[in-house]
Figure (cartoon, rainbow, N blue to C red):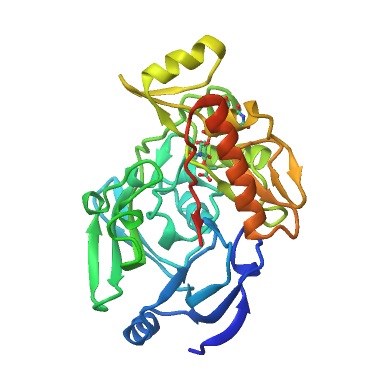
Length: 333
Ligand code: EPU
């Protein structure tokens, strides 16, 4: 294991932002990881780099976790436990599960990033979140070096949220994640309109057909980070009170929304941003994606500060017009 100096993080973040790591180490095993954290405490863990916006060089030691491996254990006649190491690519894991006819992850195809970071923000798309199939994870306590198992309840999952974004932020390194998937009698979810449409309302699609539909939908709406730098949804979809919602419907009777509870209504941030006139707009090399206003993009050489400045401009306008505070979903470093 070699600690390198002044390494560009541009290839390591899907936004394609140039920022340097003062010190950088590639870690291929959990043994090496434990060794490093025994001597280094001021660390920054980098997985797939798909949910970060780098606005400064990183002074901490950047640990790029690249551990690989997938283990399959039978659970019962219908279900299987799949344990994947943190450095496994998320989409490749989904494709592999689909190829083995293990059901549960197919709606989450093509989400960028690695397995180890997937529980931190409880990744989700098209009616499924990983909490729905999550069994447990193993994580190393950075202070003590000891391994701890977190069950589903321990993770305290919420919408794009978990204990690792809150009280345990920066305290643990997730080393592997176990999912409970189906071998047969798959519990499919095709509630999302566009999936249903693509499957032509077929009643019992295979999980491969669902994954293919999800891939087609994402490719049609979301920019491919290999071509245009981005970090998926930049903001969370805000939840507003029913009073504010009623007030807004007077002016915007068509406002798209999902009712969460009697007093909580979720509004798509992409819609709010589009109404404010930002969709498809470009400011230098920082922009708002032309097909999904929730996604900010780096056309080439935008800095993290350029993207962040655009995000603030959007937040201010959404606040002014709708009285809604948009919360940034990606981690600003
Ligand atoms: N909309 C617009 N304009 C836009 C974008 C969206 O008007 O530019 C409105 C449309 O009315 C549309 C509605 O927003 O019907 C919802 O849009 P979409 O189905 O694309 O979903 P979203 O709420 O914008 C969320 C997730 C996505 C996930 C999709 C599908 C968040 C923050 N984002 O987006 O997640 O793929 O649902 O489930 O919850 C990600 O986290 O990186 C991500 C892409």
